[in-house]
Length: 65
Image (cartoon, rainbow, N blue to C red; front, side, top):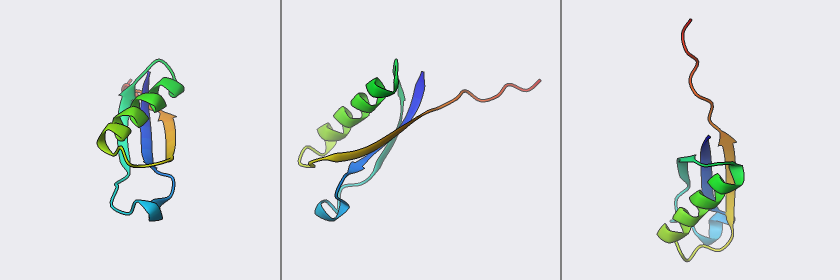
């Protein structure tokens, strides 16, 4: 399945220069997609404490009839 994941610092005031990250992840389920995205975010921004994340399933585009 494909998921759209958004990750950012939980307290934006503590990390004003760290950007929000949006990504599309192929994973077995939502938890796996979230884990992959948060792991990648922490590699880029290791000093950030708690994260705020959201994940939604991306549906394939409808095929014309």
